View (cartoon, rainbow, N blue to C red):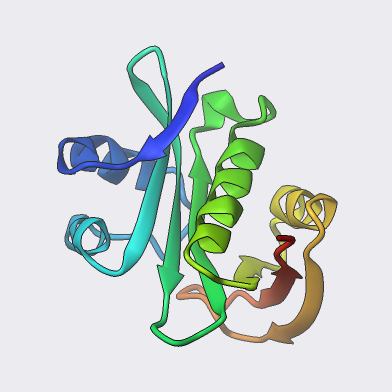
Length: 147
């Protein structure tokens, strides 16, 4: 099994390549570079020198909630616990930053992701129609992070 670590600038080409497996609303090279420098966490799952997944967590100063902005796993690594490892690491990092909640949006038709989040204790708090570039709907979820 691989490791979860903070992304660095040298990871940018691999992060951009990984975005191509996202169905839409892909993060650009510029946006990923910004996240590497901004008040955000960008975590990667690395195994044998290859980046197999990443997670972006955003923070707002003074807010008790973090936002899981993106989580992606390379298709060849799906079903191997990569997403769960990234999610658990992201939650712990948010807790370490003093956040009490994690929020996220997930495509309504992404059943695997919905199952992952529900398995990890996320609750549905709403639905937003026409949320994504392709007009797909999003399910809004949240989880209270345990201390």
